Length: 224
Image 1 (cartoon, rainbow, N blue to C red):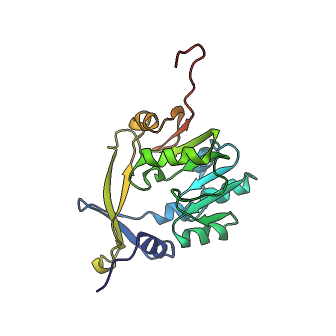
Image 2 (cartoon, rainbow, N blue to C red):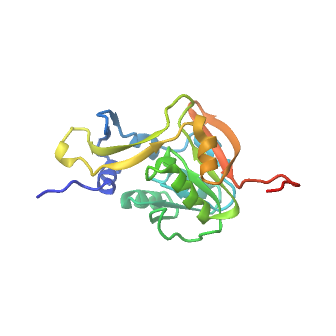
Image 3 (cartoon, rainbow, N blue to C red):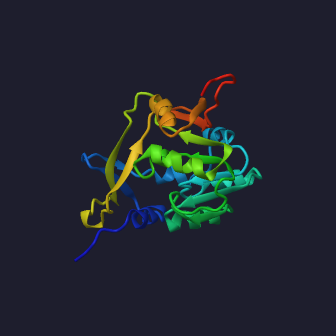
């Protein structure tokens, strides 16, 4: 009996140039925007990277455009991704990358100064609060999380989806995976749930809001 390919297998094929699309549990279909991840960094990407301080962990680095740009700046950085092809492409761009799951053991735990969740990667695993709590564990206590969010007015939520070839071959559809969308409208509540605070909120480009999350600072003299 045949089994569906994994998300990693399907995503790897997409990174190798095969057109894929995302099929939602509600029947929605949209093209997988691989071109926006494999291109060279643009001005909005550079503005996003300006928010990264010190040694940076790029969570869900994909084909490595941001991790490589950090390396070119002379900044210590490491990309992690569960997709082997993504790791290979990141290394081909001259950046360091490992095939790792953010919820597994990671090098440098407790010492990273920035964790980068770009391109909607705050949705990894379908539980943004759990993801941010995990990211807190790998950060230096003074570290920051740079999170790219969905534009204002976008509904936040979690759903199931799958990847399939653009040809619509259902037999090649991947196993379903959970993914979350977090609107900039809801970042405050998300940060609070993860034990973090919103330190900064900017728009690095049209429709690209970003928040910087960090430790909760208790005012001096507080009874907390």
